[in-house]
Image 1 (cartoon, rainbow, N blue to C red):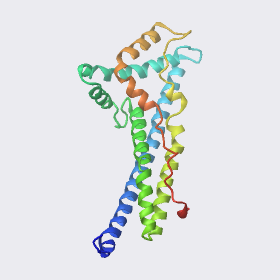
Image 2 (image 1 turned 90 degrees about the horizontal axis):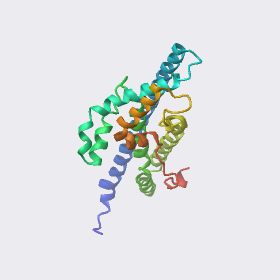
Image 3 (image 1 turned 90 degrees about the vertical axis):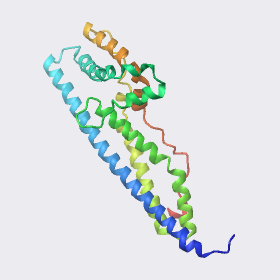
Image 4 (image 1 turned 135 degrees about the horizontal axis):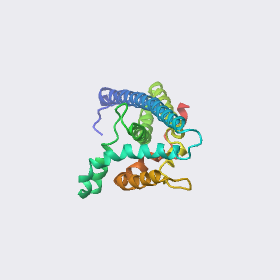
Length: 232
């Protein structure tokens, strides 16, 4: 347009290389954080399972309410955080959800650390998944200006990140966790378990939408084609 082909060398190509470096560094950071959160989630779940088994040992193997007490304990642990935010009930739905999310602390040992880790992992997957179109456009520009090696590395790094995160979904969001919000009542219910169930429903009601969001695995857009066949 302006007969300035030199701009390709002075501006465009350096910008493409900067973009590759930025995307690569970002992906590495996301993968590292994802791996760290995933490992920590396994540790937290192991600790919770050990606590549940210890409770079974204390109550005896024939105690029908041991499972219920374990669930009730978790419900009561989460409920104390509901009281502190009771004043937000008059605010907008958006503000309520924001307030509820503050309960999800990634601090080690926090009562809802497992939920916080699941939420953080879901956020990372969603963020990386949304990069498909952007990465596709960058790959095309790199190949167009003969930066094939850079394009190959970026495509491999992004493909690795997507596959690793997709493969972790069944582990992070197993079926038993997604169904863990079932009522605590049943044929073997006791007065304590029924009361715990009622308190869970009443005190955790504001967090119900968020809890479903945390417990549901993120949707990955595998139908979007982003790879370049020339690089495979």
